Amino acid sequence: MTTPQTNAHTARTMYRRFTENDVEGVVRLLDEDYELVDMATGESIRGHDGFRDWMRRSRAGLPDAVAEVMALHQDGDVVVAEVRNHGTHTGTLTMPDGTVYPATGRRLDVRGCEVLRFRAGRIVTCTVYYDALSMAHQLGF
Image 1 (tube, rainbow, N blue to C red):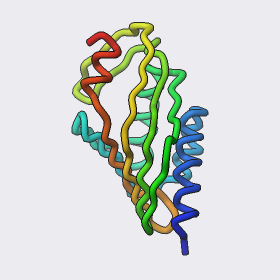
Image 2 (cartoon, one colour; image 1 turned 45 degrees about the vertical axis):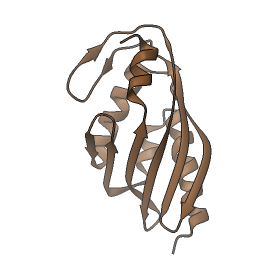
Image 3 (cartoon, helix red, strand yellow; image 1 turned 60 degrees about the vertical axis):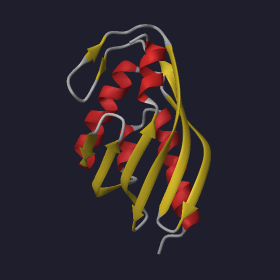
């Protein structure tokens, strides 16, 4: 049986491994039915391979990306993370619709919330909320 404290620890571990660009380390924390939903773009990522592809695309555009946990709130199998994502846009950023943004060299600093749902100690869904307009403005788009 998992506890909220265990789920919160798993969430913190996931963000640390993301920052370290440890893709397989993150995958080990994900349920086989994992789904990431990006509310700003409408993108839905499914499964371990879908996550690997999403991570590859994310890191291509922002190779120094950092996911900094500002606060965690938990209730049973749900953890809500207030996250500050920041990095430098030094590579090509490919959006879910295929739009490609060449490197700008600009810094990006966006805060948002992510709702993580757990099943048997693994992350089964991650619903991401952030201000996409602020992100686009910071990158000059």
